[in-house]
Image (spheres, rainbow, N blue to C red):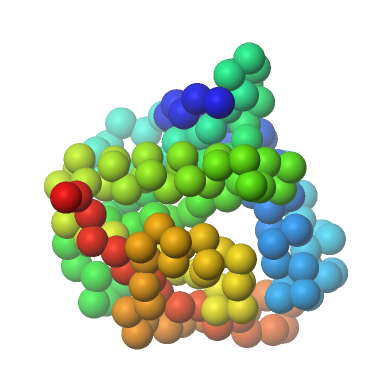
Length: 172
């Protein structure tokens, strides 16, 4: 496995990981009909890779070392969004293909994401995780992220899904 910046042409592979991860991780949390209706082609249209603006989010992909087009997971970082997080970086997305869970793909991506945010000058980072996502919350807790009291939610298929904000210092 190796990590590289996502480039134009990676959209469908990243979207496939994103959809497969949601369908596996959020089953029982989100309505089945919503998860079953997710399509990688629909999600791929939302991505723009290769931006040159330094303030734009950046996505790194984990690829199979023997097949650089085979995306195993991805992480997106950028400036934190929302109130109470001014000056922080944000881990905006981190997903590994379910076939790769337990193979340290997520660990490699979260470590790289933290390093990228620190190199960009951020001293702390935040992320949002579904409150009911015990697997994800456990993963982030093992990496030193802790709830900071921020709470929000979003609606999917008529169901409001509560999210909590996690925060972590960056650097030494």
